[in-house]
Length: 209
Image (tube, helix red, strand yellow):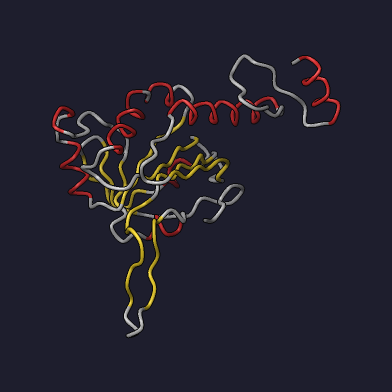
């Protein structure tokens, strides 16, 4: 599994569905210099854990917007599958009401470049290319800063849903560091003490806590 933290987020242009409308050549580049981005992968449309995550992000979208953060989802489904799922009522297993972009990674190149594809292509004994594993994305989440650099990533296996609260906490920690230059200790939350990244800073923090 690649560690992308500290590196530029892999570039892509792809089809997406945004608030029920198709968009071609969607790219995260549009947010450079403007917004932080939470870019997350999920395995498949019309499944079980996935809608709980996607809707959870939508239900907290105002918390992301007030932090000037764009939320973008991605799976290996087609844009037509995304559109159909977005037009399916929630009580029928759909995600109706989700407004943020859902990217189509039908070619699986985005998942591959972010190294979250649950398997890989290889050649069999006959020299034919085949896919080993599940051809879907793990539940990867990447926090990308305004310079397009990945500052945080987490990857869950397929059965394990993510915490939207933790995603927001990581945004708060990154933005606090960017504004104040202080680092954020374990379990830090806004309003709590941060510390200087020095031996004295750590000693002072530990002495107080």
